[in-house]
Length: 327
Image (cartoon, rainbow, N blue to C red; front, top):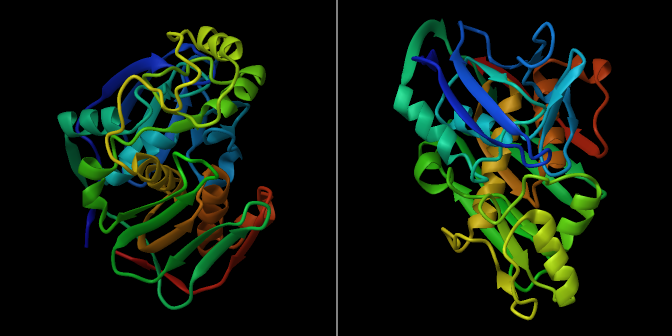
C-alpha cells in the first residue's frame, strides 16, 4: 500500500501565458487528503475553483483548457504532468489569469520546484485505477489517432508520432516507469511548425510564443517578407528564409524531443483521470483531443454516469473492460 502525498510547502512560479502573452503568477499549495488537483482563479471575484478532471476539459487547441464555475484556465498540461510524475496526489493551484505560464515549454521548472520543496506523506491510502482483463481503447476516426490501455502492474507509455515533414516524420518515445520522467522527459519542449504560426496569430493565439519556449520547425520555405513579418509579430530576430530546419534559440535536447514532449502531454492529460493508473498506454499520433477522449473513457469505466452527464468531445470512444481499485 502507498500513502497519498502532498507538497511540504507552497512554491510559486511566474511567466508569460503562451496565448495571452500576459504575465501570470502560479502558486502551488499543499492540500488535504482526497483533495486531488484543483485550480483556483484568484483574480476573479469569489475565487472560483475548477476541479482538474477530464470531463471539465472544454478545449484542446494548442493546449488543454479546463472550465467550471464560469471561469477557465488553459495550458495546464505541463504542470499536471509534473504533479503526476512526482506522485503528488493532492494540490491546490492558485493562478491569477486565464492560463498557466508557458515557461520554457516543458515541465522541468515545475518538477524542479516540487523537488526543491519536497513532498509530505499523508495518512490516507492512495487508490489506483487498475484494468484487470480487457482493454480500454479510444479511436478518433477524423485523425486516425488512437490510445490503448492494457493491463499491467505499473504505469508505462509507448508512444509514436508522425508528421508529413522532412524534419519530423516518425518518432517514437517510451517511458518504462514514471521514475524516468524527471531525467528523460520533463525537459522536452512543446513544438510548432512555422506554417502553423500565422493562423494561430490570426486566431489571436500564441501572443506569448517565442523561440525560447518552443521547438520551432521551419520545413517549407516562404517569402522572406512574410518570414520577416512573422518574426516581427512574435518579437524575435529575423532569419534567412532560405535556411530550413529547427530555428529556436536552444538546440534540440534529444533527437526525438518532439516525441518525448508528446509523451509528457499524455501524462499531463491523463493526470485529469483523478487517480494514478496501473497499466500500459500505447499511443498512436497522440494529441490533446485524443488524450482527453482517452482520459474520459477511463473515468467512464470507473464512473459510468459521467458519460450521461457530460458530452464527449468530437471523436469516437471504444472501450470495454474490467477495472478495480487497488491500494
